Length: 578
Image 1 (cartoon, rainbow, N blue to C red):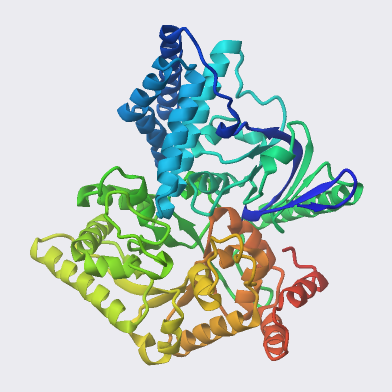
Image 2 (image 1 turned 60 degrees about the vertical axis):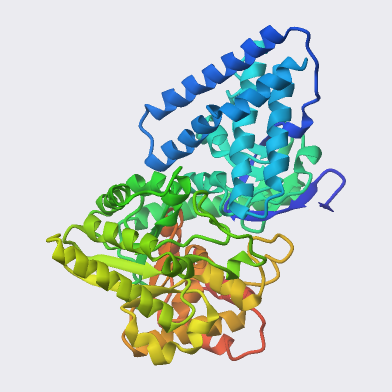
């Protein structure tokens, strides 16, 4: 924390969902702040707890019967499943019988689970702790509601939620139109609440140490989701900066609405293909997504992560058919299972690994568990039902892994033909490029690929040897670092010379400044979160691609470590909204 003035405090965090917000703080009390209390009325406390569980179950059932997306439904079903967990309920009753209040029993039982699972070196399980904490907080709120007779979830005005952690189900309890931003002490890109917030366009900062102790409900906050900062009781200078940003945003939104149906084309006539990335809660936006050219990345692993057990072939077919129906005839690039590292399936046994990001994951795992891959490919063949099939294999380190995966698909196509099933009208097989080793052999092997999609998230962390999920090192590199841009430039030129389509589907493609850098390198296909599409389109409509490319070529020959400052100045000089 850095002192800005006598009254204004600045906190540094990590921007998991970009954007700006100004509102009063609403601090949600963390579990740890509940003080143990004893009671001599065990029967009454048991009844209070059971009543609270019944009320929460009714609230969940009521929401589940409404018109909500499948992934949102799955998140609420997860809460319901935890609520009905007999072990957790039995543990709470036992603590009540020891002479404690229902609130204390909920807190202690949850704390024991958190302590136990928190020691496990499994990123997925540790992040699922937020779901358990979410459930406990909701029960505690209901117990307090029963005691006071008040509806605690009613928000009279716009707020920025401040919490140690936050579960997606608790967030969905609020009127989201009044949630202007979220600031968390914890958080990561893969937490469910982050994905829900991104889908609804709510700016979210995480990794802000001691935020719940420093901020009080009612404090005026400004959340800067571009630079990862939170201001408490901001100074006049900070407020003036926000007002300038809001004026710029208003101008941008007006322009974005005008551009919604325009062709994504630069001033000199270069058409840019704009796709959207889909997965877990991103489907919340599909029905209202701006016009897009394709689904450039469908993360097939995320529905697997929500399932209680391994989805069978028929279940997978239904999932993929829904995505194809949403796409309305536009191409959907299905990325095969990208699990391992921070995305562990609870029903697949994993040995603890010292370095899971570079361990047994993604294509390495599915090649070793070939039945898992074959079932998924079989489901994809059936789901397209005679239409074009686009399959992309992740985490390919060398051409041998890609060819082995491609042969597996060919075997499934032959098996489908023998069974008399309808075959895809076209089959396009490509690879994610996210491991540096693939870059250096690309010129020799590029002709084996039907298309390539650059996954900048992993490629960047491997190139800089910096874990993007580690707060201590995630800010130690810049996406517009010259060496990284030179690698991207080489990939694009190699693919273009071989006439192999090459796109970018990492987070970089959805950030306007970085998207303009990609366009300046000659990339003509970008895929991003739906919420980012109109912003990127508006920026590219204002640039001359050839002039920008010439400017970038000059920059890459200089001794600058990063081109961020120079690119920002160029776009401002040319009055490009970014």
